[in-house]
Image (tube, protein in one colour):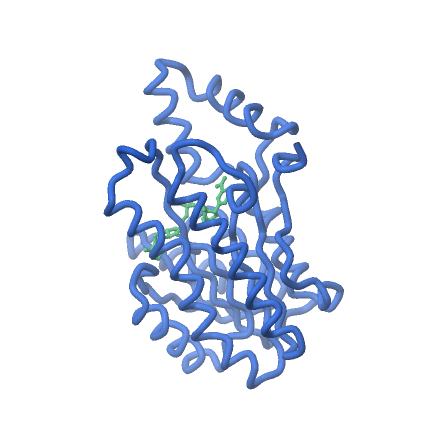
Length: 261
Ligand code: NAD
């Protein structure tokens, strides 16, 4: 399947799942706009590496996904520099855990801004571009936590449930516009975000990363293994294909059976 001639904007693609998705879409032929934080030289290395490996155009925009005006400006800048925004992957995310009564207010606001509101502002800016071309794919990276809850993750779970709801609204509104909107709901994927959770938990429990890895996986997933950014990337590529033309408004689990229970 070729995405040649399509332009994909992937938020939070300097690391982890977003980077895996950007690489998979580039391998399928799409031009890519990267976004996310990190050291400039490392980002440039990734950008140039993807461009060279797949012979596609790869740009970078450092918009802060907690800032609505920067999100709109990034979508406009991508359309201007690369000719369109055909595929929007809303992926940027953060993690923090605490019980509700001690969950810091500023963390709540930050999570709602980056995980929930950014998806709204990104879709709002990209939808007119997609409608004008009669083709588009919006892929929102939600989570198993968009479908079920865990303790100590109030803002994350609330925001991800909101992302799943917003995905359904957008899918209905765009059903006859050539634009599909879906949510990918991963279980555990080994990325820097999860590595930090493992290390924090091992330190807190005086345990080893290996031991808490097994515990953390089997607490939630019947299948005791991580999904990979490459697998999530392959699912995103599939959602952009003609075969997936009528899949819309769906939360798609890639979670080792987490929410089957
Ligand atoms: P990660 O920490 O490896 O990557 C997060 C990315 O988001 C980075 O590129 C970071 O720079 C970017 N980012 C963070 N705040 C930003 C901001 N304000 N503006 C722009 N970019 C910002 O994390 P990951 O594990 O790859 O997570 C990616 C997405 O997948 C998140 O939405 C996360 O909730 C979701 N997810 C992850 C898992 C998992 O197990 N790793 C499971 C389910 C869902």
